[in-house]
Length: 203
Image: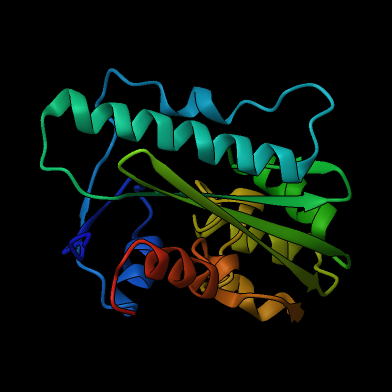
């Protein structure tokens, strides 16, 4: 009979993902890329790639890299969890802004529209891999240029897909959500719990 896993590795720098995983009562250790790993290169969008295909492919690549990292470092064996979030306006993928000007551009596109937030999550346990996808819809109120500039000047958009964090000051502009709030934050709790239960975690 397979043993119940006691912890997992979380291959993500996101403090929000670590916080959400903690809410499920799962003990985890971070498995982060070394300085010589080009983690950002994994997030390059392929020509004509749909947002769904993109976020699932990037998550799989991140998991491949994390599993290789685990073996290379000779760490104790345990399941590895990865996730990736992207914001899509139609088929247009809005990744992490390059700078403040790029963040303002993205927020101007989202202003007064409904967009999708897609978060893919994947879990590797030995040779077994499971994956899930959460898709939510978020409607932004119309934002003035001054409001966008103030939000960007606060520094919150940098490092976040679509140039905003739902759990921060951007919530003041969110008119409606349909889907998973935790998925919009970066780790869909329902889908993640399902994967973890199948892996033997007592959730």
